[in-house]
Image (tube, rainbow, N blue to C red):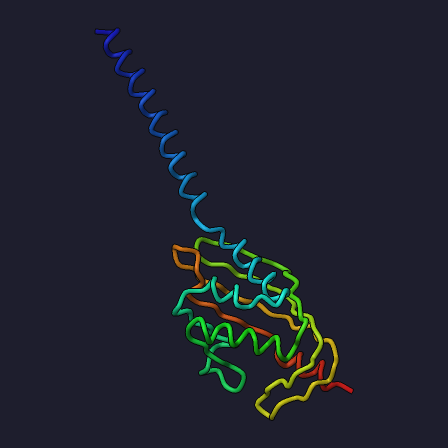
Length: 178
């Protein structure tokens, strides 16, 4: 009887180890096939800096929702963009106002399907900048826009929601200070 119970215990222990190894391998395989959200956000920054905004459009869901400075309900500088086309148009509008602008990533935090990033956009002001008081005409000054974004991703690694917050008052000051 002792040999049988030792065999049973040894088998149970071996089965437990095999189960743990199989579970760890499956978990590792799932992690490898899951898109790296932090890397996707870094690619967004590179695409923006390299004027490849249509590539960013490929990285968002068809029905993405973008809320800038709290969304359209946050007057006077909030805006909401819905869908891939509006998302790309928004980015192209920023680049038209600040052509050649680049992004420097300051901080990035990834947690599950969410990514938070703090960054700085730097570039020359060469296009009209819409404000609640009318457009600020191009000044040629280089601005540094401090901003933060919060991304939410679906299981396929596409952005489904983006919240963007930028220090617009500081931008206006940089462009209008004497």
